[in-house]
Length: 287
Ligand code: X2W
Image 1 (cartoon, rainbow, N blue to C red):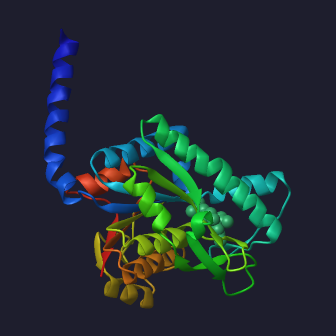
Image 2 (image 1 turned 180 degrees about the vertical axis):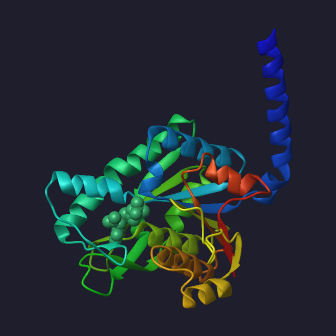
């Protein structure tokens, strides 16, 4: 008896919650949302399951998620097993041809397919591909002595549009193709920004392991203009590992993405919180 009363209370609260989400669901109707899922945000099977459920929920509400993933920690552990040393310069992995082989094996093989399986396990229809498929992400060698690290120079988004239009959820590994057929290792944030720009996405969500862009007192700044981001970077308030993320955001906005959100992907239902509630999550950057 007591149990059924509690269940009734919970169900009434759930129904109210769903009803309250309607204006936000309508606001994003038909929107293309690019989501960067970093390797750190894939820490446990539970986190993956919850993320996958959120993606299926978005698609069910006629919002079109496009996932670009990382997998840095998984690449590290495979390189360690194979006793191949690795180092990062300014957040990018110095990549010999041997390293790129391992990166492709880990990202396109294991990581990409585990995200696809997680989404399909929740009733979604995900299709995995990499930036090499249909020349989605054409790259040039990045400046500096980084080896086979690529900077995107062109995005051929047609394959992604056709998957979206057929009702699929594209899951993209951050590899790129060179003009002479080379394989490039692309930083996951950079790839997500370029793809969001190529799709003219309504929003880019960068799921990270920090709560957002912080001011000098350490408080999260919830709304920022591109100009404020440049200003805070000049003043040194935005620094270190946040710079590649804010730079990705500025580049994406410059390419026509409407808004970029830098947020903590470790929070349960982070994407739903951002898109379906008035509270939102993390730091939103707009033109
Ligand atoms: C990255 C690609 C994976 C990635 C790497 O080799 O680690 C470069 O650094 P996270 O999990 O998003 O960090 N590529 C050039 O970005 O993974």
